[in-house]
Image (cartoon, rainbow, N blue to C red; front, side):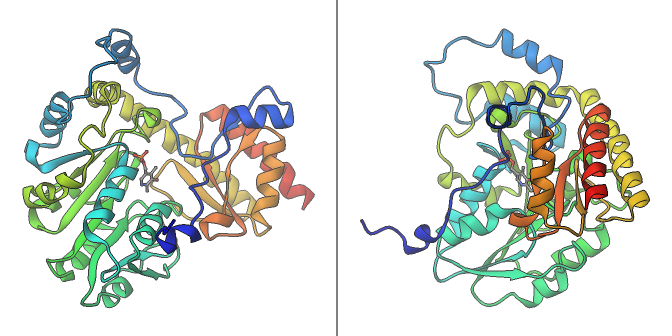
Length: 362
Ligand SMILES: *Cc1c(COP(=O)(O)O)cnc(C)c1O
């Protein structure tokens, strides 16, 4: 077969190890997974209740327009329904945008250490990829601007950034947006938006009013704790949404996901609770790093990247054998760091105690 050549150079996304596989492999009863930035508090009870009484028919296709969820989102975000596009997770939106705008005669710009799916999809589309080295875990926006050429169609901006956790302060972001030519789509991926507590964080939704070439991506997978149901959304002006819609599979957001997401938005108390717990959990990690003199990036997310100054696969393996799944920094471009999702207080204590043993041994 005549596959796209570039496809043969790719490997499938390697997700964090699953709890079940680790249980079996290491014969452990208790596994704590702090690898994929999932919410340790699960999801809102209201969502679980709503799913119990969900309309029963699995034989009926989902509402392709996601009417109820769309209305709920539009009201919550104070935008029009035509300014929203739904995704089967925000991964799906990244895929749609790539499909719509990237091709062998185009180029795309991203930070070197950022979410892997931008590059992955760009490779599949056979486009020219410009990865710009970051500055201390932050996007180098000036260098990203300088990388623009006449073929540039998409610039990916992840803030707060995965895997570093850093964010772009408002002033720096708007200065960047001011300088990007209007024919280039800027994708602002805010998967961790709801975890942010920084004061100089921007209001991205209102920025989509000011900048006609900006799309904001958010997800129900992280703080809302609905990763398994795969719902993400994009917000942009009508023209962008209208152009993207044909690249969307008609039934990409499933019925249970739509229902769960619509109910989840209404429970902002749960969101606030998780954000506060996350701040307290992060303080545990910050204290540990200060005591141990470990380098880390201050983070606006529910994960932290810590430089252990030893081979990250070794640390990963040590923790794994003690029942803690984290993310080795190897595949993330940080070969001596690990990325840990902030868990519950007890989970964090357990992990830090195991990590402490590991560091004492080294
Ligand atoms: C987790 C994550 C996503 C994907 O989320 P889904 O909605 O589950 O597809 C997108 N972008 C970033 C930066 C992420 O960390």
